[in-house]
Amino acid sequence: MTKRSVVIGLGHYLPERVVPNSEFEAKLDTSDDWIRSRSGIERRHFAAEGETTSDLATKAARNALENAGLTPNDLDAIVLATSTADLTFPSAATMVQASLGMTRGFAFDVQAVCAGFVYALSTANALIVSGQAKRIMVIGAETFSRIMDWTDRSTCVLFGDGAGAVILEAQDGVGDKTDRGILSVDLNSDGQHRDILYVDGGISTQTTGFLRMQGKEVFRHAVEKLAKTATTAMEKAGIANDEVDWIVPHQANIRIIQGTAKKLGLSMDNVVVTVQDHGNTSAASIPLALSVGVERGQIKRGDVVVTEAIGGGLAWGAVVLRW
Ligand code: UT7
Image 1 (cartoon, protein in one colour):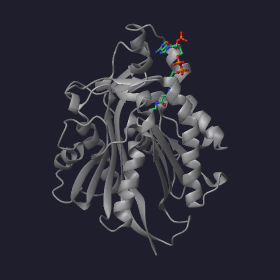
Image 2: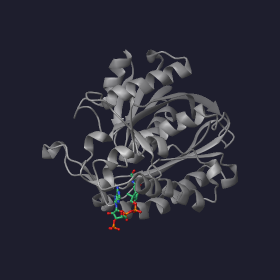
Image 3: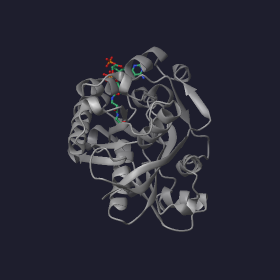
Image 4: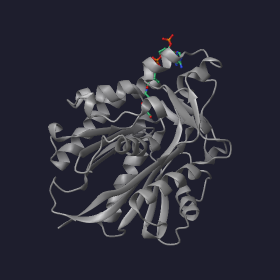
């Protein structure tokens, strides 16, 4: 018998305010055509004034609990992936714990920027497989609108705010690829590339800072590293590419998504795409895409799903799971 982390519920939340590309045309030397053709983004959501990452995360978490038919105290833990927590401390995860009224278990944040949700899934899976927890809420939530330099057209048109959550539960499997749940994980980072995507401020410098990115450089690393980590994770799980039902990639740029699918030998018919509606929501993008993919009727029980993401660090990785 093998212990597996199986998704038993999920949900998401997007802030009310939708910002179409046309809003940027009025303020910056940019165009809807440039943003669409270079990134695939058509619109994104921005949090309201005073609306924080833990607010978005709490709403996504409530939707996931309702979807699973559980109450907050049915959870043993919350693992929240974010780079835009409300405060320096405590963690956004403990804030969500309090907002939900969860009075047991433990909660903490994971920070791996756009790869954060993959890292959080891996961490939660390790806690479940080692018997430290039976049910874990894994959340990706961000308010990247707070770290945008609104005068930098090469970054501020690309990002959005949002949150997604999945609930993992320990279930018994037979130990092969027919099991439901997380089948394999592959994580990587290389701090030598930290200067191509970073925020030029932080706690220790007593500033907040703005996101800075050498887009072309990140792009160059992205397709190659994403295809490689997804392939490695599939090999670890013993899954061939014709057995993959859905790639659920980090939603940064449609050209990266298409390039990675092509390298993996998979059709875009097997890819869940939400970048046009959400922009790049960093750690929130994969759980948002999973939730929307299930809502659309794309992802179904028993499907093989491959998630992959890359972001600041660089940090990147992939998780293979059977839905
Ligand atoms: O989630 C973390 C991971 N992040 C990513 O995966 C992002 C990776 N990178 C990308 O998605 C793309 O590189 C971008 C969408 C950021 C940019 O696309 P690109 O095809 O690499 O364009 P570029 O940076 O080479 O810029 C081409 C031109 C430049 O003008 P010149 O130098 O050729 O005259 C830019 O100044 O486009 C210009 N440009 C813009 N023009 C209109 C840059 N931003 C804009 C803009 N509107 N918003």
